Length: 210
Ligand code: B12
Image 1 (cartoon, rainbow, N blue to C red):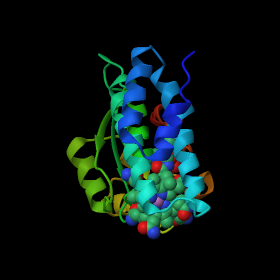
Image 2 (image 1 turned 90 degrees about the horizontal axis):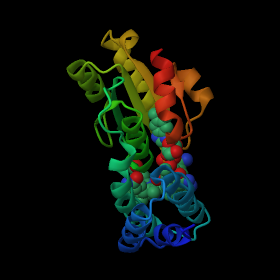
Image 3 (image 1 turned 60 degrees about the horizontal axis):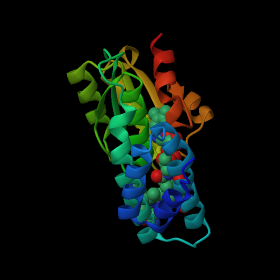
Image 4 (image 1 turned 45 degrees about the horizontal axis):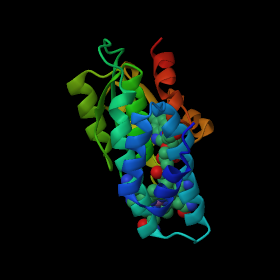
């Protein structure tokens, strides 16, 4: 079994070149891409977060780690997407207004695609009316909202309210997630589903549609 701790270390060091090279080697050696994400990349990013919390890392280190994580993820992403499957449904996804974090959102997006959903990714800092417009335009059945800041969690509620105001709240299922988000918060703001992990996102999306 290949030792993948250098991938963890490369993300921790913000070494995008090494993270990419190790991921390439691991995939060529037949390592399961889901395992690579779950057991190596996500724990590395969690450790980065802990270091930030203890003032061991600062914003520049975060940016470098995020870049390393992204460059590794770019290689894995196409492999998470199952080929030739009819889309189960259409999902509009984005990080809510005021929030620039997109690593978790990108993972959820890749997992949904891998689970057979067609995903329309609106990116970061997405205002409520853009979510509403995208759902109308694409006739999506699911909206997935990500927030990483306690200060941007209210943008999730504002987005749900925008769907109510547009009169189409009952036509979509709204899923929420992100590190500070909880099931309790989801219940409080009237979201249809919550998960703390990208791995469960496709299962959750199928569940709310059935
Ligand atoms: C990387 C990072 C950054 C990077 C982001 C780069 C990028 N492209 O995303 C940069 C440097 C830009 C950044 C900036 C800031 N950050 Co920051 N950042 C982080 C860090 C270290 C990691 C986040 C991450 O990527 N995690 C890895 C991914 C995989 O996890 P995740 O996002 O939680 O997603 C998982 C689940 O939550 C779930 N999920 C996520 N979304 C969704 C959606 C749905 C629908 C579902 C079902 C599931 C789901 O699935 C994912 C995988 O399992 C966290 C620390 C932490 N512990 O989270 C701080 C953190 C989020 N940041 C923080 C702060 C304060 C900031 C800044 C304000 C710093 C500053 N002073 O400027 C700015 C804000 C900028 C802005 N307006 O958004 C704080 C937030 C504190 C709070 N309580 O609000 C944290 C918690 C650090 C800390 N402890 O202080 N940050």
